[in-house]
Image (tube, rainbow, N blue to C red):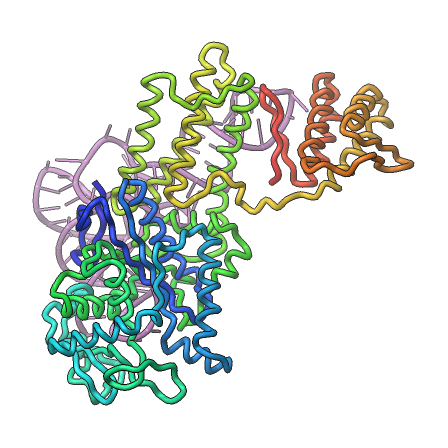
Length: 535
RNA sequence: GGUGACGUAGCCAAGUGGCUAAGGCGGAGGUCUGCAAAACCUCUAUUCGGCGGUUCGAAUCCGCCCGUCACCUCCA
């Protein structure tokens, strides 16, 4: 049973959607006036995670994430840059899609834009005016907070406390300082839409209520966002929505904690932010994702290069661990064997235990740190079993179990949005030329050091590859380098090195490894064969 | 001023009343190896910011104190 911490009750509650298996899920999306920063990414990644996990648990999720494409900041930016607000919004909307795709975040099922919902918003505001919950004043329309009984129930604020803390200048047209704007009269040179109260544009809070209801109905199951939205944004959404419909607006409110930097909240207004663009310039997207998964979403975390670096190493353990297991599996399996079904009841039980532990932790308010610990434990078990892949009696069983385990690890990784298949850790493609040089050096080395049989062996392999080499003429060939030249050249080097090892010519063997080492290539010798990887 | 969150090993981070305080990074030693690498094994918090209290029993509940942060204003 999935339990979710609900900001409304400040408790973990059993998750019961209105109409299972359907889940209606709304997330406050970006205001598109700039690139989002790494702190904002926490919200988007959390929403993506919730969606993936609900889906994994068999729910049919309809996920809506809005784009706020009209607002003060967009207008300000447009004015500063001498272009239209629509132009600014279009640019950063596109950037948003680009960046979430880079982070492996799936686009929402519905991505409504505020400017496409103006008529619905006007109708909604009218409804509030009609039932006395809102009033017009000089072209603006305000929500009458005093008339809504539950005001403050989400943020646990008392109206009296709020008045004391008032720090903004109060608009004299407001009946109550807490009243918030639903419709803003247009100032000169601002984008505007016609309305019963004159030309203007919607207030921020009304957008989300209307878009959520338009696409998900009057009561939605989950509404999520950053914890700074609890007040006033989500409080106001609840007020206006429930005042209009008389029904609960959202059943579960999920809020993520912030990403701090230097101990302080990362924010646009403080100017201490790092854009997603900058981060992705330094770290692979999966590392960024792992970084967020490594802490619980309701706990503040601190951004820093050291943390990202640590995430990179931890994730590499999973990714390269799986890679190693698979390669050793390939080395030790008879031709054509690819059975990935546990062969014994015990194996099947062990495998299911992994999945159920993972789910148990995710069920507990999306406890990703514990979910990750399951992956690491499983990885360790696999490495242990690796030693028995070539066991004469038991090998086939162990290999089948290992294949099933690898598949499961990938499956669970995908639930977290981690792609454990891709190298994805920044290991850039390598040019072939340096490798050719190593090959050439190795050949001359062997010739001059009198290891003629090794030199002949190497030359023969090079010839079979379709090339010849001599110090005088360099590389010669009838044909261009094939696409998999890198792998083929590595095979040749590994073959000659292993021959050297067999003949106990360790100096030659170690020379090859050292030369490859300068290219960042590491060799690993297993009983069944030699693997290489690029660091 | 009001409200809320957090403080667990060298670092990151789970755990919120009861088996030996997850997992990761880093570090030390060992096994395997011709040497390596990878991996595995062992060790790295007798104790959870401090002080009291409740309880048979507390990192976990309560009180006070110290420290850090956030919300009350646009903000993920």
